[in-house]
Length: 133
Image (tube, rainbow, N blue to C red; front, side, top):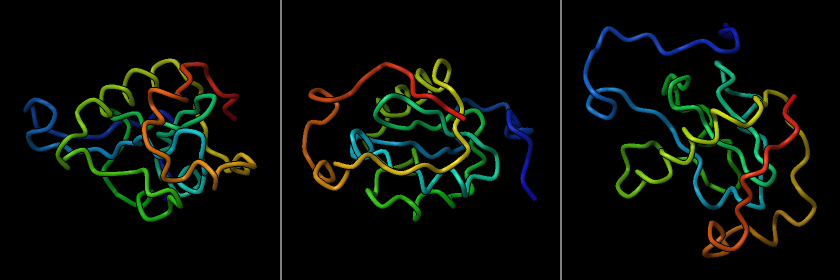
């Protein structure tokens, strides 16, 4: 069963984020690759589209993990993995301003050429929104 867009995680925990709650985050390798296999499997539609990458809204993600193995660029990780704090912040910041995306579209024609390229955040990241649905 697919939850409605905008659904929020339900939790009776009043602990600070990161103590018992977990979310998934999109990281650097999505930049300029922007495969969208992940958006069509997400049961809560928590992906948001930038000009050249996607992000996950951490307040909407229910930690199901179905998106992680769908990413051809292997850019999605659980936020519990070390070193992802800045990516969690970036995902939260841009999910608040970029449009929601729930329908898979084709990746950019040059996506494979950018898969695995280092330092994409500094070189290629765009804060511009994508088109969304």
